[in-house]
Amino acid sequence: MPASQHNRASLIATLLALFQFSLFGFSVHTLGRQIVPALKPDQQLLVVYGIFAAGGIARLVGSMILSPIGDRLGSTTLLRRSLKLLAVATLLIGVFPGASKVGAMTAGLVLLALRLVQSLALGGEYTASLSYAVDGAAPGCRGWSSSLAPAGAQIGFLLGSLSTALVIQGLGDGATVAWGWRIPFLLAGLLGLVHSQGFCRTDQGQALPPPIKTLSKFKRLRKQWRRVLAIAAVAAFPLVVFNVLFIYFVNLQTMRNGILTAQATFLTSLVQVLAVPVLLAGGRLGDRLGDRRLTVICSLILAAVTLPAAIIASASPWGMLASQILVVIPIYVIFSLQGSVLSGWLPKNDRTTVFALAFNFANLIAALSLIISSITMQTLGLNFGPGLFCMAWAPPCLFALGWLTREANGSSRSA
Image (cartoon, rainbow, N blue to C red; front, top):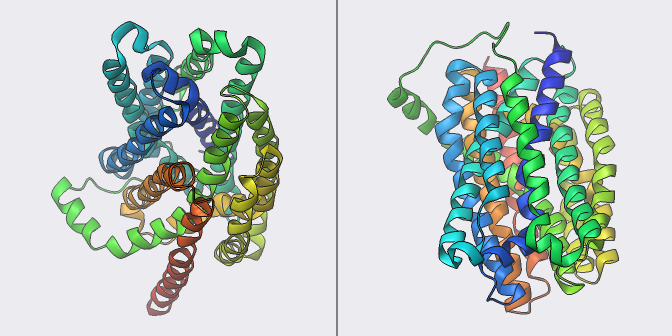
């Protein structure tokens, strides 16, 4: 399959996947009203963040269940199955009954189950999409191909924030809570389902490894545990910063300025627009300067600006916007090179599974950051809590980058 076709398929698949998946994060206030209307807004937020964190666990489980499909049957098969599962779950969220019809307990359990299915599907989809693009990259263009999947994810994230904001702005508080919040979920799920039906049906030109028995597979994976932890540490730092600055503080400012005020969501959408060219430029720059070197440089910059960014993000919606602008270049350049850099440290026969395990373990940590930020800042009144939690992941990231680089250099010399 031509590299351009690989790139296009990877971008579109990830765009639609993140469009569907991100809607939950931008709808936490509305979803909180749907399942626990009797609680206060900050308590509703904490309940939905708990469901969000449970989704992080499901992503990790999804990587263990679905990723071996990518190693045995090819990333196209894995992508097609993951996209279909994600689309069905998204459509069902769009029609699920609220507490007013089935009671708070049932509504909460239904929403939890659907979010778990969404997360399970994404646990296989995102890293498969990265591997799919990088494996089909033209010579000297691994960074560029790696950047297209996160660029698609970013456009999907942007569609999620914009569609939510447009519904809020167009329908107002009452109609949005009553029924309008369902529109983006139904639209995104329908698009995802249609795309999954037409996704490439064969792994043309992809050399697949011979099938490996499941028991032998896990014995081999046990030997990779150091790499799993190291890659998870590298991925966790930017993901935690992203979740805190681009999801937690957006919801915090929305809650402070009116539960369904669209201003904070519109402001973060502006930064999402800037992020797309940063992602694409990061891929090109990685091919020229070296993807690993550029990842180290941007991780150091991110470590320097994260704490002040988190401090000013809590001040106002405009402070939130300033904090996002402060981190947009380093964080998105790192995202653009993750497929090229992280998968490049792994053996090909186990790459999809090990990469997915590590990346989704990092996503679990990032999902927990929303709960920790909410507890430390809103419950305990510790304004530095979110920023300190972000910074706690900088040293492990930098240490793991150094260790992985030494391991890679040692392997190349022995070869």
